[in-house]
Length: 600
Image 1: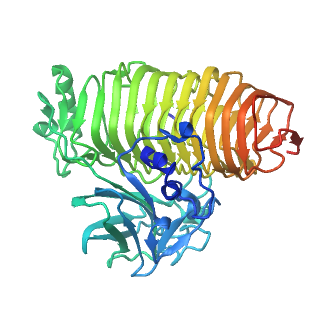
Image 2: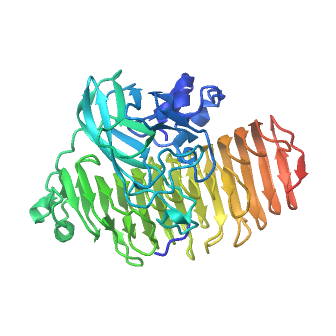
Image 3: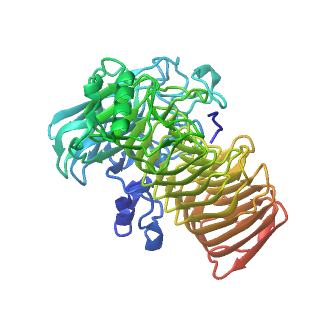
């Protein structure tokens, strides 16, 4: 997370226990890589978000294109891909095709195209597609199945790329290009049966020199939901379902009427233009489903009232919010959902894309459930709980290609507490961490799946930083899995662990329970403790399968207790100590030499 002013499906993981090939698909591992089938089923079963789609990695599909990667070097195309590999379609006959394991009537493609017509004809390996003229380039991707074209996907570079150091620009001359990928989705006219071969090929009207395909999510989108009984409709208040005119005034009137009458507000199938956010309070807003009821526009968003008078009893569900934010601006209200939403509010089954932050909530407020979000292609965080927020659950949600932390709890000046973050999946955050807890107390992070962190962050992060109220009370990290987590921090020139604690502003003294944690193929060390003194860490059950560095690096003074550590494929020395740190080993710890070495 950079301060702002104001996956995998569970069934794939379970299937991996008996079908190694599916595990390769889920993790994007090359066929020669060791599988993790031998992991304890109690760890792997139920990790991550139980999402409706099945993810297919392009590099594991049939293709005559060029596979790039694996590579984890920041500013390369492959490093930002799920599984660190992607397929380049460079010639007019290049394709990638997938055989459906289950019926599907909808698909979402993660892709990249050159940043403008001035971009390179073919991105060098390992360099990414930076260096264009910064003018958006549009392209087409044809989708064939059952002997005919079933879809024509519109692609664009409008939401690519960042350049230069943070806070980044849109100017290729600033160099260090990154944030290459975007998503395009489409609902088909009918369902494709299991076993169907679906081919993606460059459209004849495509002027892009190449198209990179990272993956495709296929799913069986349900039929539109029915209008709730007694509900009011936004259309009856003048909202245009064809998106021809700004519907903010109509939505505001409809929300007020629904709130006063205690009746649900119905958003029927359609595309409603909202060029700015709309305030919500004491109202239920119900859509026909994220594939059908779409709110879109420049600055679109649904916002609660500002704290300390937060909105209460808000229930928003079954719709999509798709913005037009194509560069990071942390000084404007450009979240998909924002403000303060407490008093038993709920946010559920919502697709969010192309906004600055998917969900950015400012406290203080109390009482909220966030469930089954799909947040893609944000310029900054996927979700951030900011300042004095309590009794919030974030669960069963999927985050991919976010420009900063996937999920963050930031206790700036006021402590967040009683926060539960469970059964979520975070894939390929472009900056920072998968799940980050910046201060606060009594917070639990459990059963989440995090993969492919890129730079300046790791998978799971606890930090006394960014003016956060220091961590205290009980902080529980249990049953989480991080795959290819960690990175090199360009400022410090050393590795960030897949799990890392950073006592930057103040020592860490909380009771931190790290339990039943699995770290697979970490990019640097598996665990990093860094900064001022760190005490109170208790590790019970840590499985590490390969790491690019040591099992742990201790760049801080302090103390911790470790038990039940099982490590393989870590560098020797397994423990690298740079300060006065007391490690207490208890119980069984296997697969590594427990003796530490000084050498930072």
